[in-house]
Image (tube, rainbow, N blue to C red; front, side, top):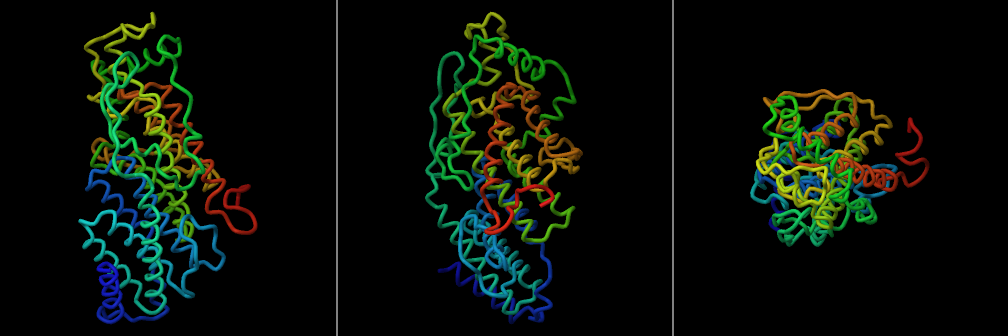
Length: 428
């Protein structure tokens, strides 16, 4: 009730107290709601030091809310992501998107609600007030509230922990967040479908090969500034926007370069973030199931693995400087990258879209340029070997999880309700 009263006050200020003409013409202003509110979400993840799983869920809720709010105002709507129903005739879609995003953020990041209130007031003021803006904003707020309510019991809380393991091949530390293996998906029927088979047996040639590679490429004792820089570029630790956030930033950059209209922007970001969040589920389920040891433990204790082709090095240290906080199999960075590249390539009907990116952890803030999405995903995955965090088989399995989840989301979600789908023969 308090939030509804505050929202009504914001609308009242916009219409009566800000001195902006409330005309139909002024309501056509473009506040770039998809970009600006996603940037606020990215900042929320950085500020709260959210984990990758929590970050992916927040991004998905925000973008599903914006998509359903805008889609509900369309003359020919597509299938809803979560909230069905039609918005008010003549409602402003930019106002609806902003209000929907605001409704999500003030509930998921309540300590910073005042800042979100101010951002919404500024957006609505720029749109100029009037019936279209106020009705669009009211509709958007309703959609955002319904998204939050629908996801309140999705299994993301309470936090669960898998206890530390012992013995050869087993991850040694306790780790939290394992409840995400059962979280209700956004866009796939059953994310567990994408849980791969086990990693190579410890006494196999395949394991020995992957072991030998990371023992050299990920070894902190062997200086390799280029490998270290690549690892750092994609490391994205706590306090960053997390790996899902970088793929969201790539989407926003490419959408901006191509000047996508709002309805296309929110469809792109909804598809992307739904896939990223569902990728979390399959990734956490895989880690929980196999609980595979990290390279640091594997190399230091190779005399226990039963493999004649591996050699123990008790002093080995990962180039990353840390063992890693979750089980090794699979690489979550790789899973998110596989999903992100697949959604973007599928949405635009081509992978060959060049872009530049400076991640939150880019050394010196320097950007890197890529010829397409797959190239970025490949580098992100390989960076985990360079950092001594993962074996290559975990990189490949992670990429495959992301591709599988993204393929299902593209093929089945946010489709046109009549005629060709959004994901048919190109150009669509």
